[in-house]
Length: 221
Image 1 (tube, helix red, strand yellow):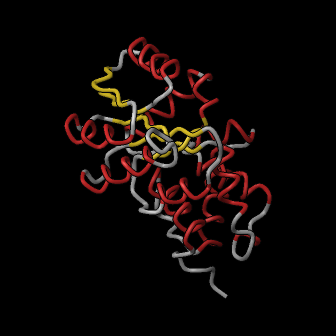
Image 2 (cartoon, one colour):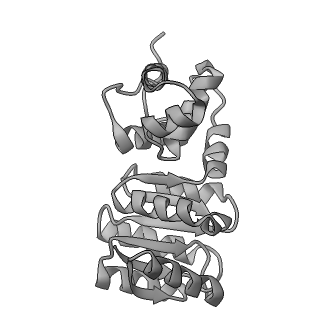
């Protein structure tokens, strides 16, 4: 994969470059501040961008803003955002478009090399990769109906779906059959008023869009 990295911390930036090149990927550009991000992304049109939320000069949300601008200019440009903390506003804004190819990971997740590379590849392929803490934070915002109608197991399945896990992985994680997972997913969509025929990453993004904006229809009364 061709990757653009936007990170101002030199140690972390060089570590990412080494990690990605060692894994067989090509780092086509690096940006160390906010103004450098958008030009690099538009010039190289990478398979995926790894972008820190906070970059100089303001160390606020320069990285995220540049990534959002790039996704508007190049719809569907895969972006994996890194953050030191769960910043709900930024996660919500990144996911608000409901587009594919988005990720939001906490920086300490990078130390788990296999997980990080797996997340990067999922995002590049048009999927989602959300840190479990981010998912928990987003889900905790909507404890009113219809989330309240989900069983504890359905909530577990929804959380794993939001992380971008497929049915096989969910079944293995929960130690249940794939058939049971499919049944739980069907129940989740029915209760959330979302199309049960939606599959793969699209269904995950539909669930996330519902959790964040309440745009989906509520369950039938």
